[in-house]
Amino acid sequence: MESGLDVAADRDGGVQDGGGRDGRVRDGAAIGDEPAPAAPLATRLRRAVLAAWPALVGYAAVRAVGLVTLAVWGDARDASFARLIGIRADAGWYLGIAEHGYDHAEKMQSNMAFFPLYPLLVRYVEPLSPFGLRGTAIVLAWAASLAAAWGLFAVGNHLHGRRTGVLLAVVWGLVPHAIVESMAYTESLFTAFAAWSLYALLTGRWLTAGTLCLLAGATRPTANALIPVVMLAALIAVFRRQGLWRPLLGLLLAPLGWAGYIGWVGWRTGRVDGWLRIQSEGWRSTFDGGVGTLRNIGETLDNPSTLQWYLIVAVLVTSLVLFALCVVDRQPWQLLTYSALLLLTTIGADGYFNSKARFLLPAFALLVPVARALAAATTARLVIILVGMTAFSAYFGGYLLLVWEYSP
Image (tube, rainbow, N blue to C red):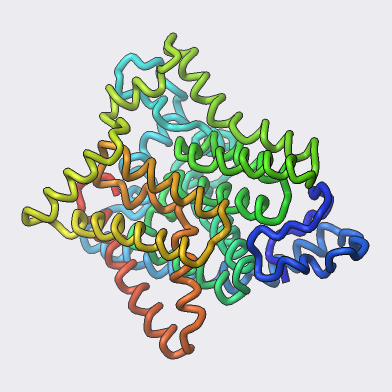
């Protein structure tokens, strides 16, 4: 059973293998058969929910443990739960944009460094919401995290079966910095768009992939890891005669969100490189090919450091090992390229070493080998492992927001 909405009308011809479990059969039709008529949308949605509900429930459960732990620990420290997840660090910047809009770069540390889709959603949904601005931002982030978990399930199920899809979503909710998925940050929203865009590529839905990539590009600058994948996949589809106008339109749509915002910042600042200048001079973030990251790793390992610094090093090293496993496992090139570009932009950038593990949250495809290994474990072993991961993730989420003094 496929987990996504099987929108057959968005295919241009040919059965898309995409690295799935069975390249000969997709959506119940073998190659050479006449395509079955598309089921009504309500029927497809019901089937998708029935397939994905264990992933959504499992993800929500492990995140609930983390949030309850944070609330109890925060109460003991007289720290407001809503403030911790709704206004801490970058969340405050997004709320400021939602409430007051963008500045004019009067200071180089301008809020134009932050992409617009999430704060715009908060601004326009808040009047319809009973939760106020901060509460609306939190609820939207939670909804986005569930959409992301569903997208991860869709990819995992498509590649390796339902059990792997469920565990991929759950494991993503248990990574060390998973608390950010429940904060008023953009990682969850971006991951949702990226996961569903990549799923659309794997299943040959070019317009869907391009549209979701456009939205991802309006959400975070790290869409520069997704855009080339979508555009290249669309070009390959055209050359292989798997369609014409749909892949081409998907190709054209893919960069518009990212390029449109970068262009708007350039117009607003009067400089073509306006956004890059804000990043480098205002936020001290530049691309140096990884020199700064290696320097910070060396300093962390050569001096007494706090838990967070060591864990960042561990996450970066583990991510590279997982990427190597993805290559050995012959993961579809779309996922490999996306992961490689995310690793390149994260490790290759200087500045904000404290947040590099968070920047890799959207690199969900790196967790596929972990999900596959867990899927092969016995139930008893799986339960023991997941309980241990849940306990550590819950503790570390509290540590990040109550003990750690920097942005998570």
